Amino acid sequence: MSPYAPVPAPRAEGPFPSPWLHVARVAAALAAGMGVGRFVYTPILPLMHAQAGLSTDAGAHLATANYVGYLLGALAGTLLPALVRSRTVLRGSFVLLVCTLAAMPATHSTTAWIALRLLAGVASALIFVVAVSSLLGHLRNHPAHLPGWGFGGVGAGIALSGLLVLALRSVADWQVAWWSSAVLATALAAAAWNLRPEAPIAPSTDAPEKAVDPWFGALFVSYGLEGVGYIVAGTFLVAAIGQSSPGWIGSGAWVLVGLAAVPSSALWARLGRRWSRPALLCVALVIQAVGIALPALVGGVAAALVSAVLFGATFIGISTLALATGAELRFPRSVALLTAGYSVGQIVGPLAVAPLLHHGYRPALLLAAAVVLAAAVAAAVLRAGLPRHAVAPRRSVPAQEIRTADR
Image (cartoon, rainbow, N blue to C red):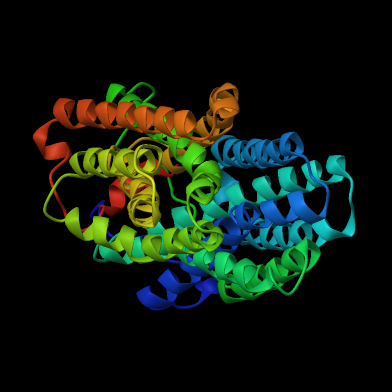
């Protein structure tokens, strides 16, 4: 049998669904786990400050707890690869996520909120690594834009949760917002309930595992720095825009971020058929840095909206390109490892800019933009150093690369 032949699916699972149905299920999973489970906190946070007595420091602690939980979930997927291929883990993570969302308005204890956001982070990370591994594995022989649409589920979840909170903020309180987000996550989880994780892969003798790979190291550094810069923008961009624009612009910009993210991964994946992924990763990082710096350098509604579009059009695309490049490099458990590095960056980011917030959001956004530019430099090193054949455009990631990368 050719090493590029698809791995037969277990008979008990039945026939594999159509590619678009699989994409839809992955998109729903990512919309629930990431778009709602992680990012609904951003538009709800101002309501909790105003109505629930949540202090600024406590709000930051809740965000950090979620990032720590996400790191723990990513590390679990790295150290225990069987979790990434378990439907039970996926479904259990959905249930845990919905329960944590629904439990937020049941208490006014900051300690309880921190625990709930920590558990939500664990659930989100497990959903992400299971869904992405399934997406890259099962669609290995299909056009590259299909996985891109799956990643777009994160943007769809952000847009849906942002619209939900925007619609509720004038007619309901923070508690209703959390309960409504739990209902939304339940509906999305139901749509993804039958998602098939990637099947266990037998070890291959054709592509030995790599204990040390300097080019994967460059990718790891680039993606980790992106985690630092992206999370600063993702946490403070709405607040920064709200300081210099009409009140609705901040919330509206967040919805725009989600809408721009929906097609972005598919677009970057299509571009990957003509240009190398590391080169596109570098370009996307530079564009994102411009988007992050824009509201810090130029005020007004137009700059805010352009910033939202640039940020939304790149942050999911960067994940798509980075994770696909990791698989292309044939590095073991690349999805979980890169997600763990990204998670560390998300913890470091808010801590690094905290001293700057006393002077407003402008210095924090400028520092975030500088970090993302550093990530672009690391991606450029990756592009320049890899052999030409290793970064050549291709229609889809070959099966053998996915097999080795996800072991």
